[in-house]
Image 1 (cartoon, helix red, strand yellow):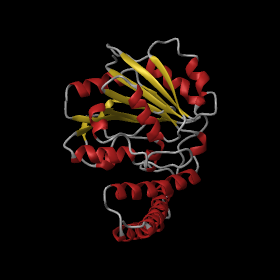
Image 2 (cartoon, helix red, strand yellow):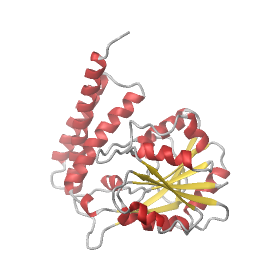
Image 3 (cartoon, helix red, strand yellow):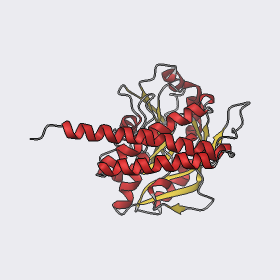
Amino acid sequence: MALISAIICTHNRDTYLGAAIDSLLAQDFPGSFEVVVIDNASKDRTREVVEARLTNPKLKYVYEPVTGLSVARNTGAKTASAEILAYLDDDAVASSQWLRVLYQAYQSNDKLAIAGGKVTLIWPEGISPPKWLSLELSGNLGYYDLGDSVVYIDQPGLTPRGLNYSIHRTFLEKIGGFDTNLGRVGKRLLSNEELHTTELAIKQGWQVAYLPEALVAHNVAPERVKPSWFIERGWWQGISECYREQLAGKAGLGQLSRGGERMIRGMYKSLKNITDPAKRFDNFVYFYAQIGYLGAAIQGMISTSITPRN
C-alpha cells in the first residue's frame, strides 16, 4: 500500500495536465506512493494525456461523471490507498520534494489534519502582473506565501490553498468528506471548501500547518488576467462565504447587516484609493463580492421561510 497518495482532480485542462502528472511521477520520495487522476467529466483530450503515461505503475485513472470539485476530491479519496491524501491542481507543477515534505510532517505530528505549502505563480509568456492586481487579489490566482518558516494556522482564512493541499484520511472521514455544497462546479466558481475543513479541524482540536518547503507553482491562465474574471470570482466568493456561514449555523438577518456593512466599507475604500489602481480594484472586488453574499443570504432566507414544516 502507498504511504501517500497524490491526487489530481481535472476538468478540461489537457493543456496543463501532462506537466502536473509528470511533476508527481518524478517525485523524490523514498517510499511507495501513487498518483491518482480523477477525470471529472472532461470533454477534451484529458483521457489521452493520462493514457500516454499509464505505463507507469504508480499512475491510476478514474472517470467521475458527476461534475464538481468536491465530488471529484471525494472520489479521489475513495480510490486512493494511503492514509495521507495530497491534492494537486491540474494546472500546477509540484516541486520534487513536495510529497516528501508533506509526508514527513504527518509522521512527526499525529494531530495534523491538514497541511499545504507555498504557491508561486507562473505567468503566461508575454504577460506580466498588471498594475491593478494587488498582492491580496493574487491569492485568487492561487498565490500563497506565509513566509519561510512552518506556521500552525489558527485562523481559517489563512488555510492552505486547495491547489497545494493535503489531508489526513482519518479526519476527512470523520467530517464526512469534502462538502459538495462548496467547491467549484463547472463555471460556477464556488470556493471555501478548504476554509470550511480548516475551521472544522481547529474546532475539533486538530492542527493545520503551512509548510514552506512543500512548494508548488501554479499556471496563470491568460483568460484570468482580466478585471472581469476577478469581479466574477469575487461575486462567487461572496456566495461561497454565505453558504459556509449557513453550514456553520450563522444564517439569518445577521447576514444582511454584515453584508451591507462590508459592501459600504468596500465601496468607501475603493473611492478613497482612487489614485492607487491595485487598492482601488481590490476594494471594488470586495464590494462586488458582498452583492453575491447578500443575494445568497436573501435567497436562503426565502427558501427557509417557504419550506413546509412538519
